[in-house]
Length: 320
View (cartoon, rainbow, N blue to C red):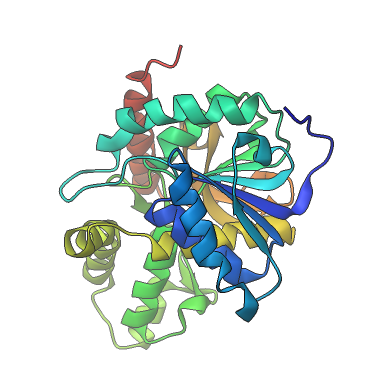
């Protein structure tokens, strides 16, 4: 087993070559962020096939070596991305997946940990908040180096829906989904704005005079979008692949961008020892600091309820 002496900032490892893993690998190949990518899967031949297929697009992007490997290959990776796990089926919630995927994580995370990998561990598998907590416990890595993809995708969906509703570039929308990446997620409307203009005021500017009704519909559309996609095509993977790419570029470029990633709470908003999604400054060392966005009393209550639900699920897991 190779001992980790340094991190190769141009190397990424992806564990799990299902729809999400393969789509993430494809997005990262096109991004030009890395020059080396290793794919790891319990079905090694699947990993080989995906590496071959994705490699055939390299002549049209930046030089990159893509190959199937094993856990020894994660040692010097700048980012280790875990997408392995059972997929969400029609009618199944993300939390329904928990026991199946915790069992899978029991075999994956210790393999990463015993190789003393020094890169960032990014959890993408669902339920991502619970599994990020599991990864923290099993790996014993510092909290700043264990990141869940959290509500980065949900937030992108929110920005897209708001941009469409208000006929404005969605990149000018500043708003977050917080809490669970799942059914108890919350839109932080109190801090939402369009380039500094409060959502309610911007709605009126655009001729929408029932903002509360309209924002309720938008929040439900965002929350249910994954279910709708799964009902129609049985899985979601392109959107999360782009979210993975975005998190990687924030880390690799040390952007110090604010992303709503899954991280451990330590008393913020009255929540202790629960992993859920909150905005945080993210850079080359992972999580730098959580961002205390403005929330009203109802939003704080909803966030605490989301945390309670996640805590109850986590307490049902036997890790030892």
